[in-house]
Structures are given as structure tokens and as C-alpha cells.
Image (cartoon, helix red, strand yellow):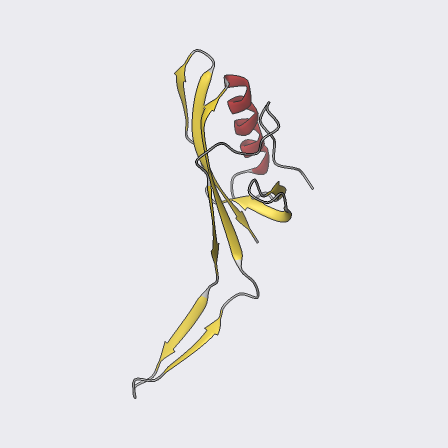
Length: 117
């Protein structure tokens, strides 16, 4: 499986980045006011938001090429959690488009959200 690219410094992300966990729960409400709750998925999904605000044009180009190769949400890859170093296989992007900005000579940025399955 393809590995998410690292920056030239060896880091996965820049500060500030964040991670959150989500568990999908379905709630059925009955006429008498009672509720029944159950999980819709077997596990917890993790989402990482990577804010890459100070990358070189070469690093941005590598991120864009990786995004295109993964075909947005379609592809799967292995992602290393920048907070604890755990490898998560079967991750994907959470969007089908990438928006990058060039701030100056050899200075670019973007925000990516990655989801674990």
C-alpha cells in the first residue's frame, strides 16, 4: 500500500494540525418517546486535518501529485499519525479536490483532511 508522503524535514504535518475520532450512531425514536441506539459502523473513524502553511513548491507539488494518484477519496494509502507515530492502513482523503495556494517564491500551503476506514 502507498505511504503518505513526508515533508523534506521528515515530518508528516505542520503545526497546527488536529485529529478527531468519530463513532457513527443511529437513533430510532418511537411514538412513546423512547429511543433505541446502535452503532452504524464496527469501529471508530479517525480524521486528521493537516494545515500545511509553510511548504516549498516542491513539497506542494509532491502532495498534489499524490492526491491525483489517489484520485481523491477513491484511493487508499497508509498514513502515519503525526501525534503518536501509529501507522493506519486503509486511509483516504476526505475530499475529491485539493486547493493549494502559492504565497510567494518557494512558499505554498494547503489544508488536507485524511480519514481512516
